[in-house]
Length: 602
Image 1: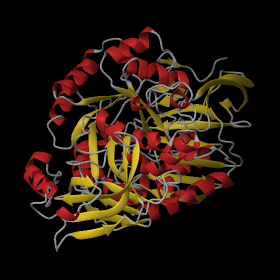
Image 2: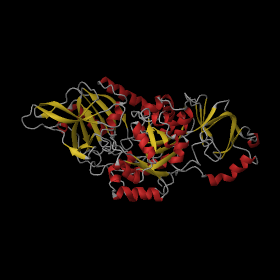
Image 3: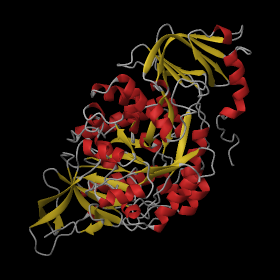
Image 4: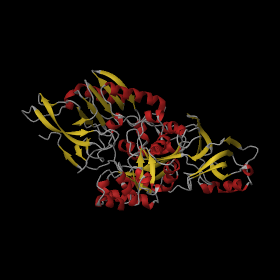
């Protein structure tokens, strides 16, 4: 370890079992007693009034109608005052990097929203810095006052042969990481064709995880629910969050997977899938709520898992069922139901006090027996990792770019062409494969109407490569360009614009800045979010970053974009494992067939 303060994990139940037993029996006083609340029992879906909770060494020792026998002269008393005592909320699948924050600042942002456990897949930083970057994320995660469990990334690159990443993750890397203290399982297995076709490396990664007794995360982003899906499930992934409709949720649960349904900043997949529970009556214990990707603006302005639970309730789910989907269901899936996910003896004392189960105001948050937030204010210390320079110098471009780097040549003599165009779908991860007829000027294909240029600029190995294509759906007008070094999952640089000169300005600005997001119009910088760590994250407070991202969103609107959370759509245009059409450093990818296609059709 290079850190002065090594990461620590929370003491295991056996280490404090004697203390728990003695407090529960009344032989020793509790450290803390929460008195006079309504016990929300997610094991039985009951609300039980006039209960108290006794806590020692950060764990729950006793829950009952009278905890006087656990109370001593030095016991801290927290008055629940008739409020509901619910378990701390769990996010079953998420990427901290999507918040553009480090684990410490992400924790500081979500603690006031009642999130006390997160299951994170740092595959974004894995693509930039490899196993070294994963270890940095893992180590900072273990330093936090809440539970951040790390899933070892499975796919860097996400689709071998379709993209080039800064680093690659091997089966040996996965096997090594399974011994780290904070690793809970394998991150989403995005190479679903590889699993379905028995790719040796993918199966070796899954095998290493299963031998360690840990959970394999899934990612099946295809509408084909026939033999290919059955083969994927047989390969070992235990959950999936890529469903978008009721049939997806039902099929996953019927095949023994947990269906994870997400509400992120731009993914609205709860309403279309929760009907499997609310209307079809399937067993709700096989469904889990998650966020997947939330940017800092959502965290600061709208919430985190509390937002997802409220949304599920608004979609017709009963409050207690929705709470199960964000607590005990998640804990059980990862084999942690004896450690987190409920307000019961032995579990970590992660408890929320709220006055209403439907609107879910997060009034007091207790994590590991200590008050960490009250009335929207984080009261806990969230320590920072000392991020080294190698994590802060990751934009490796060979040179400044010029307008000609963004040319799309047309066939000789053509006045117009038919072109393949990436079609953005609002509030959905998938794109559409579209075709448009576009004009040609001076031998170059031109943006026209709602069709913009898109470029993928190589930024890991200084090759100087630029891949050009076309995209529709942003609604941009005027001479503008937006560039980002957040470009899931390979995290090169995505540039979208209506004018090649502006595209060069934006790309070069990020090269000089060392990573982030920027938008230029008519030669002027309208907004910039600097992301110095891996070109993905900032260690600034979430509120500061949210102000910058709000300014970025406003700049996008000023340039004509009306999409909800359009930045998230921008950042995912290189995600070559979600259909239909994507861009990579190697070309334009048809994800339905995993084949490269030409930009110009005719």
